Amino acid sequence: MLNTKGMRFPIDVILVCIRWYAAYPLSYRHIEEMMQERGVVVDHSSINRWAVRFLPLLEKVFRNHKHAVGKSWRMDETYIKVKGVWKYLYRAVDKQGKTVDFLLSEKRDASAARRFFDKAMRHGDVPDTVTMDKSGANKAALDQLNAQRKIPIKIRQVKYLNNIVEQDHRAVKRVTRPMLSFKSFRSAQAVLAGIELMHMIRKGQFMMERCDDMSFADQFYMLAGQVRPA
Image 1 (cartoon, rainbow, N blue to C red):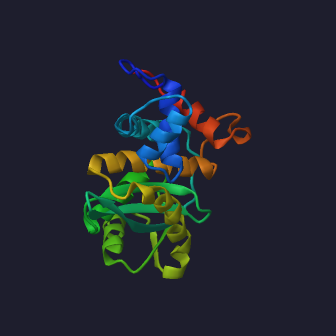
Image 2: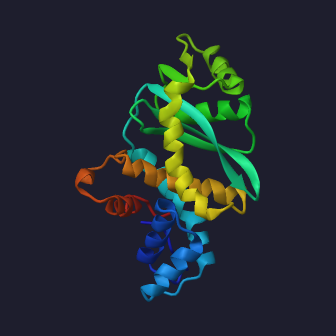
């Protein structure tokens, strides 16, 4: 279970707050009001600290229980505002729409795309095919990878085939919209990890016994129970 030593709120309250924030289009102040209606007085700044501290940890543990994805990837990037400036969220799904991986980047270039591919392949299998739009930077990153491989990854630059990942961006953007703009790159990384986590749970990507019979909320709490104390 998450280590909440030194915190004055019980773990149940913390988990409810960060789950709501990562799962639904709510601001920290919305959750503060919702908790007050339930007799729990918690400041929105505390919820922010909990989200930044615990959501990345939960997403990291989730990777140990994530269903394998397919070998045909759809890759694209979308925009996320941090401190009023647009940053770039690289994402990929397989042809069934299951999330492969994601990476928030300061820049949108071949180096950023390469970091994304390295991360995605480090945490999963190497794809047979990657479909993307006409981005030269994304193709250049994959060309670099293929230059090091005996069997190259097939690259398809067909925009209409990428509709599935472009549609999938909407689920993430729907949750981030009420947040207006993240205050720091670190907080953006942390919260996006939680949003992607909840999105993957909704898509049935959490692999543990009895998960199929559980609500999304119960799967989240079950995942929290898998965290080993530091």
